[in-house]
Length: 445
Image (cartoon, rainbow, N blue to C red; front, side, top):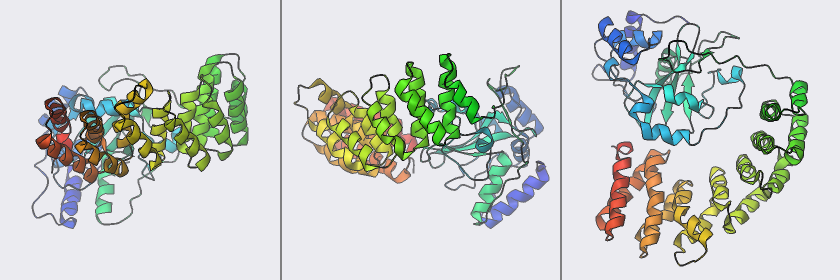
């Protein structure tokens, strides 16, 4: 794909500014070659062509929208992990392996914010300020034949990252969407990027081997291998193939394979495939100490009443997997879990260790239910019992920091500010003050 030169970028940006009704020029004078080279020397990388040429036309861009945060000048760009360590760390905790085929993953025709390589987040370059809890990142771990890096629009209110083939593609899509016009990226059929395994600053970077083409018969044969690792790999691969034979083989492995890791992989794959006929097997596996937690997690992808009742009963029983069941119900957006969590949170007199443990973390579990969780936690912030207020504060703090919806996040932030003014307990007031400090940068007007 050809890259616009500086003059073409300037013409494009002028057209963009005019169509958006900008009263003043939202760009800056172009960066000089010396400025670009100095930044590349500091970062120890060569910037991708369309972004580099954009900077030579306008060294930053202030025309913003919900999906366009202010773009920085070249001397202000930073590695995301170093600049936002808390934000980076929060996403590492939820890292899961990708099960989507490579050809589909690198097809940018339809925006997809669910499938993204969380491992790559550690190496991304942040080229924007924070917009609506969002940033624009360049991903040097994915490089196309023309030298372009993959681009991520990364926001707290998305399940992951919206990915684009290049900076130019992202800008063109932004322009088209401002005009309510469709955008179709240029695609070369069969073309795939180079995916690196090492940081972009390393001299001799290893390249990730090209994904093998899966053949059902070969994968099924691997599932019978005497090598444990081969069987684990096969169980993971069957999730990408699907179909009755794959499901039957996974069910057999879940029930009969002697190795726990194989059964874990089979359980994960069954959860990914979401075949209704496998629900009962997953519920039964939840009683197996070898795979119980994994089996409960696998039920997150279903939306049936049978498994919902199982999860609710698991939560009500307040056993070792009660909080796991709560998290799964949150993913399913089943708010029937909230009354159970509120009951545990407000039971400060119980001598039962499990109830006390769940009670201590119940606020955070309730926070996962978004608006419904906020509605349950808000009155608890005024409860006469100091322990109840402390437990509820943990949940409100999570919402103020992590909620994907900006309005909900700010509502929780304002509640923390009000409670800080009225809280009589010095220790809890200090906790609330810390929560305000941690979340205030995400709740700027």
